[in-house]
Length: 383
Image (tube, rainbow, N blue to C red):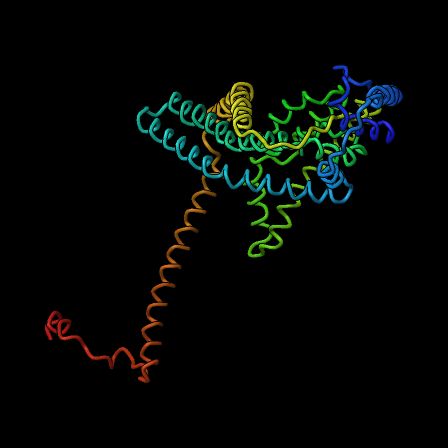
């Protein structure tokens, strides 16, 4: 296997001097080695020597190194997700406000009834819950297209191939898993690029375990409740939630490959493209196409599911049980008592402050009976 990968590497450097047949490599390891030998013999028959590209060789050696490549991968992925969460936060807030305002307007115009609830709580809320993820998906695919144009994404797939092999997957599953961190549906759609059928099905089954952006508020709520006032532990717990999703996805893929999808993984053969400047226009068009595809294919399904969930939660109408009514009344009474106690505490605080100011000037506090009366109060009292 290492011999086939090494000769395929040499073939990539000499691809401009030889004609490579446009056909897929064999799936078996023996067939792949024979194919690599034939291709190497054909390309090595060139007459003119090829000058090696030292810069490309050095970059490939660093990006595919077992240690340096992994460090570079972690750095690139950290920057990728930071940019996604930073840039996509603004349009997501705008979309949330727009749909909230639209729901308020419809709620004010339409009379109360089933149609009002269907449009405000079902249709508008369902469309808003779908469109709000569109900025993150577009930014993710824009950055993925940039990385692909630069040539780094293929190197990252080779690095991840060594890590995914023990779980029955290949480096082809790297891009679907990366897309699933924005939303699982685009990740499942992008799993079509995985050539082997068993690997493709295992990738589809394990992609929903990746932590998408919809789970971030839940993670934040859990970390704040579990570790109040401890930001370091909150950060560790938040990171652990992401790691737990990745580990659960990999374990599920390993279980699937050993039970319902048995068989050896296909050897990964991928041409390493040349390093070049990315095309912003191409990346923008890719992000646009992916966003439209998400709205057409995934958005309609999400909207239908939101309407069905609203219907199940709204019907049939039934009055709340008496225990729930009593608990609500008790909670309201406790809330009123807390408000009254807080008001009394503020009043006592103001009185104590006056006494502290008197003591600060060196005067001893006098009893209320010895305090001088206001002339205006004496007049009103008739004294």
